[in-house]
Amino acid sequence: MVQLYLRNIHCHEETDEVGADEPYVLVTAVNLASSIPVQGFPVPLPAFDVVRYGFDDVDDEETHPAPGSSQSFWGINGQPSPLSDPDNAIFIVSLMENDDGDPEALRGVIKGIVGGSILGSLTADRGTKVAALLRDINSAMGTPTGAPNFDDKIGIAELRFSADELVRAEAGQTIQKSINIEGDGGRYELLFEGRNFQASRWSGVADNWRSLGGMFPVGAPVTAVSRKPGQLDLFVCGNDGRVYTSWWSQGQDWSGINDNWRAIGGFFPAGAKVAAVARTPDNLDLFICGNDGRVYTSWWSQGQDWSGINDNWRSIGGVFPAGAPVAAVARTPNNLDLFICGNDGRVYTSWWFAGVDWSGINDNWFAIGGFFPAGAPLSAVARTGNNLDVFIPGNDGRIYTSWWFA
Image 1 (tube, rainbow, N blue to C red):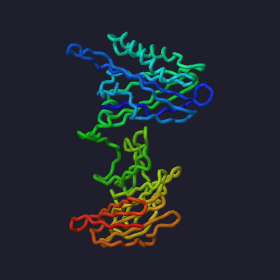
Image 2 (cartoon, rainbow, N blue to C red):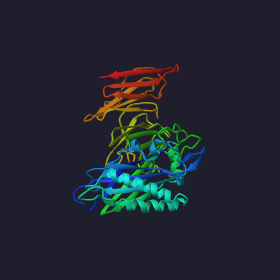
Image 3 (spheres, rainbow, N blue to C red):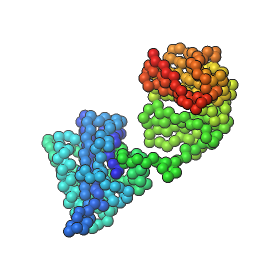
Image 4 (cartoon, one colour):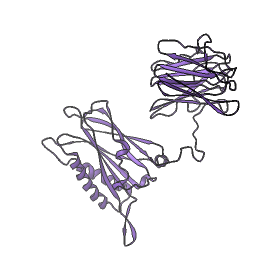
């Protein structure tokens, strides 16, 4: 079942009241598809509730989080309900500025008004019901609930999701909808979300995978990294041997849509694997094995472009099979460790830490043993800042491991 909830509130401009704002939000939710049994037969009777969210000390251009899914307004009276048709629900959002009033008392007043409004428009169409609720709730928002300073009305608006958004939410995707409310000198943006947290289906079930664009070697490995919760970065080596990237940030679509992947330089074996690691939220480091068997790197930091632009990728040594996959891991924000399987079947490593150059410069990569297929893919993981584990498939088809600890 879909849960709908307030994610956050953003103040573009404070109200005219003295001091920081203390806004509260009252969301009226009406389930038009609900019914009650009468002599064994279902009789349509909309169910409804009013949910309150409160915020303190809100200033200009601040964003304040709400409780999120732990305080949803759909699932009226604690009864989960499906919601795929937007015409089966009405959501009215009221925004108030708290002075000396009692927000919970006003919630009770509005809940009483909503009941009367619904009964008064029981046989009307949805549009008439919405208009009646907006009128009646707006009037109730002026009810005094404290003294000497009454709470001030900022504004009221309908929140409405599309059928497509509700279908995606039911499938387990997180949908978002923003509304803007202004009044009493203030201007606020409220962000709402919806999601079925119990959905077990992937978005790509039934062959619904989405194309993110690009034109690369068939089956070329894609490397993905998340440097912070609201950010994703993808990397792939193209047919022309250049490395390409596409990125996504919360609230925006992928940058590479419509084949707009960005080339960030290099000249490598087409489809070679790119290793990527985010050692901090503001740093990305890439590694790839070139046509000459050397490992190359390009790095990015917040506010600066990629170091490898214009084919300025830096060689950090080694002589390995061309295009051999590199495994990279950051066990701390100031440590990077690389692993690759050489022409002789041995695993080699090179490491870096802040203030010191790569240990493998001038082909001084350190052999850590083994006898595996030349250029075999490795996996490396740092489970703590002082532990590294490496895995590789052998000539006999078995998986082998080697580990390190400080």
